Image (cartoon, rainbow, N blue to C red; front, side):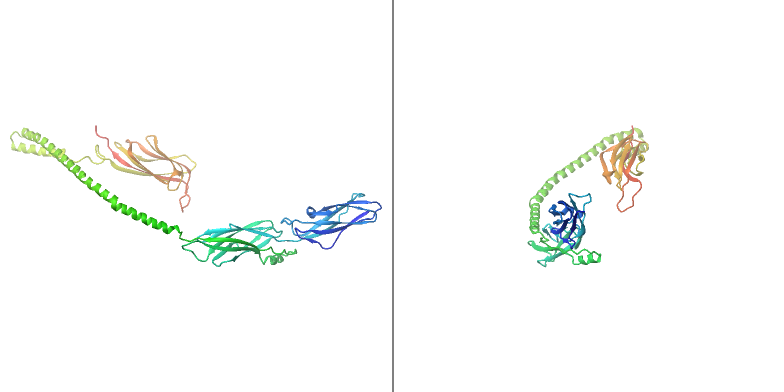
Length: 466
């Protein structure tokens, strides 16, 4: 082999962002002029160059080139021992280029940046901030968060107070600024403060305890973050003025009532009373005149009947008088009882519960069947969905639905009809439940079926006799 190359074996370390030079010595022991070319191989190739890239050597001469190592200041450059190889080829190369090798030490470095978000906060009881910390170094960093207070009237609290951040990553911490004293009223008070992000003293000891042989990085420069907390008064400045305005408005409305509205209402009431009394007197007089007219019309008829029946017999006349009295009593009797023909309706109600499982067919139950010879006047419907089920509920009568409800829209609902729904004798009011999803009551175990309840209310009446 006519060309030989060797790298300097002295210890070499380089810090990211800096530059280091490594000489390579080349000897041409042949008899012809050789052109030597260099190529860096291995992990260092991305940031290492050779100056010059080629050498021309006469027979028996020696040349020197320099490897320039420039690792970037980037968290992706791993610290520690890194292999370095140099491929050396020349014009008379027999296909076996030389490959001198050695190692280079990449030093660790620490770099930390931080930002306070937001820089200013305000509140009555505390201010809230976030601290974004970015480790731009190539080794993990353990950082302490502390505060340098320019005033002793606030207490900064960090959560967490220590961050361990891998290289090239960022983490967040919460900063709560609490005032030492409360401000009940008055102008807002401004409290400046400083948050400090610094390397924890225990970081080097942890690296030694872990058995790391790499030299520990120098601690990153502390980062000081300036912030401001504006403490607002607990009682807003506008509140007393608002209370005074409310009292004045209340006093004004009270005076308006006693001076204008109340006398007007009392005057209208006094004017209305005589009219109401006059109407009541007229109604009483009309009712009395009608009763007297009926008595006068019945007297001659009763007398004629007595005369005709008695035939001059005092006994017969007495009997006729008794019968007339009985007839008069019968004619002047009370109105029919509740539920009887021509009488008022008989109040009636019914309640029914229906259950149905999800996924199956609908379940139908009878809520009320109208008795024979009666008519049910339906006036009120109350539906309950206590579990919060989901599905359909249909209330039907005479083969047609009265109401179709979606269960998920209510827990309790009621309907009242000014014009009653008439259900004839022998007909039924039914409830049909189609369960899709079983609800779950609050603070209770989950049921297996949907469960609903229906309450009906109305009156039973008999049709008038023909």
